[in-house]
Length: 360
Ligand SMILES: *Cc1c(COP(=O)(O)O)cnc(C)c1O
Image 1 (cartoon, helix red, strand yellow):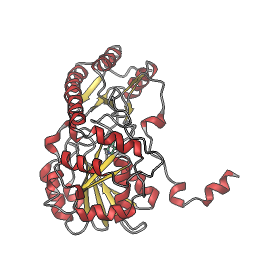
Image 2: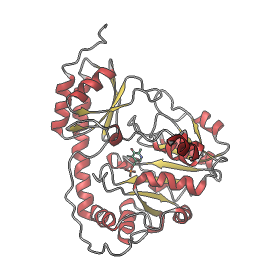
Image 3: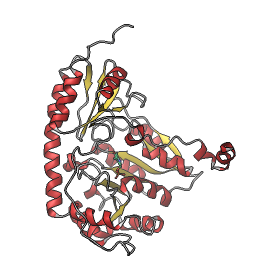
Image 4: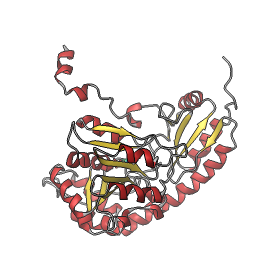
């Protein structure tokens, strides 16, 4: 009987594999290093008592504060239910299902393909080079029919920044044809690398941001799209009438106050220090084959026996993100940077593991 229901669904939805979020994958951990969250709660409290009223679509204070923080004008900023909603709004506004395509360069963030597949928009993939930079000739060849190029910098899950000369070349070759979407979910960990100040020069550049990572508010669900006012205007046509609840807007405004931004910057200093400690400690372990440099709050590492490492840690309540099945990432696990104590627990657990794969 349930089959008849399934057959009523759109064909692309029947075929869809939903995003395997860290939360969906479960685990019984007490050390959560699999979703790139900040490890501790932040001390915000609700200050508004207006739940009987509908919220503003684009809460003025949140927009103004984010614009000031990003060095842009308010009309260049859209706020949404996480950066994930921004990813999807762009497709809804710019891609004709069954006709236009998006392009991205795996290994990268999983939601670009999930959103596209949900809407019946074709995905064109151009695998990253061995050093995880863009394959420019292959991108140029794949561009016809593409409306949106998603480019994650620093990239999730590899942790590297994309070369700015390549990004410039990409913006030149897409001018008048496609938008380039720079996903800057982790930019607070390397703020000098932002492309937000390129928006004035490139009207087809879009930058995605979030409060989920350095701002420590993954549970809030609040993200930003930065772009030319024309792009923002189009996105405002397709966004829900009340995308943010009143409590979300309330907390987001506090997070973007001077104190809130100072708190975020203190997280960044702390996590960047923990990251360099962890990278050094990982590199010295026999079970680790390679530690990739990172500009973010996570580290990608290649292990001699990744399934065993993952399972051993899982059984001890330390939950990592398995990247083994991601293209080019055989043997790789992604480790979010937690508190120093969590980093130390991880290293202690890994020290018990041998250097080579043992024969069965
Ligand atoms: C976490 C993440 C997002 C999603 O951010 P939300 O604001 O929580 O939806 C987007 N892009 C990348 C690369 C991410 O890692």
